[in-house]
Length: 228
Image 1 (spheres, rainbow, N blue to C red):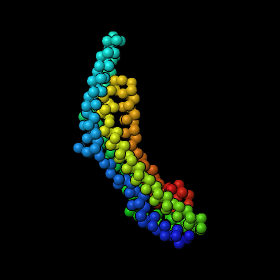
Image 2 (spheres, helix red, strand yellow):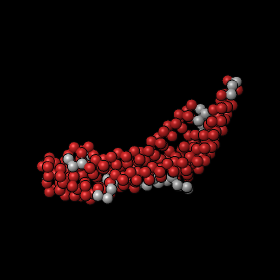
Image 3 (cartoon, rainbow, N blue to C red):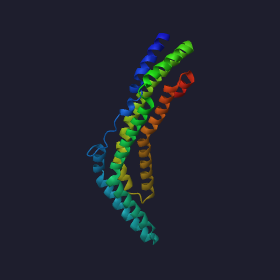
Image 4 (cartoon, rainbow, N blue to C red):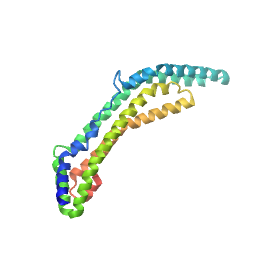
């Protein structure tokens, strides 16, 4: 067990910057000009137009029935939202995703540093030496968890990319009927999920950066477990 733990500690120390952070380099595909999200919006263009015309008819009917201008104001907000989302929505999403990816790379690199792998190896080796058999087992578990966590993050990043493409593709359609109650709810849910998926990668990078700082600075078991 000690020999295996020693091998794991050296392997983790040398490769954690690559293995545990490889998920940060998973690209977000399908959001560029002429790519999947843009084509999906084009395919849904006629349905978006139909929903917008239906919204105008509904607003006109409400104005005639209620004899007040509130439906017209709601329709104006809805049409402005539709124009902004269909015209610049995809570009804003792409810019937000690229900014989040750049931030993730920056904060991860800042937390690891040039000597991170040596610090990591030394910390794990110290735990193995001081903790005896228990420390060796913990080092093995820590190394395996880092690898499994990296694999799970890669899967999540691929799922995130797919969901962003779908949400970006239907965003103009969901914005076409925001003067109705069900349209507003649909648009709010679509926007909320999109923001969540955009921010997931930077949020995960912040968590990993804090963990790497603990790993790099710790010289005892508590620090290692806290970072893990």
